[in-house]
Image (cartoon, rainbow, N blue to C red):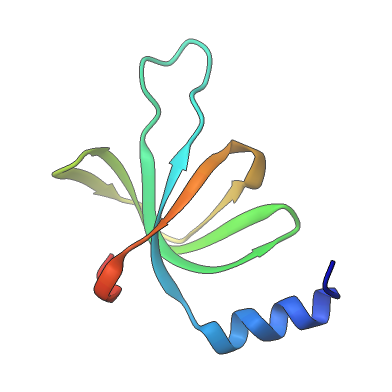
Length: 86
């Protein structure tokens, strides 16, 4: 396990990356949308996204204002967008 200060230093050098967070299904919901945004870090057990968008279908998304913090236990996997376009 690396120390927390080293992890933060690595985040700083890697920079912000456009990602899609694929979320786990919630009981009672038909499907769970994914979230697109700029990943600025993972702190306190949460993924932190800037300029978030809710992705309902591959070609349909809705922008959300502000910053989104997603609990890590809700994220199935993180997909990094190639070429830097979110």
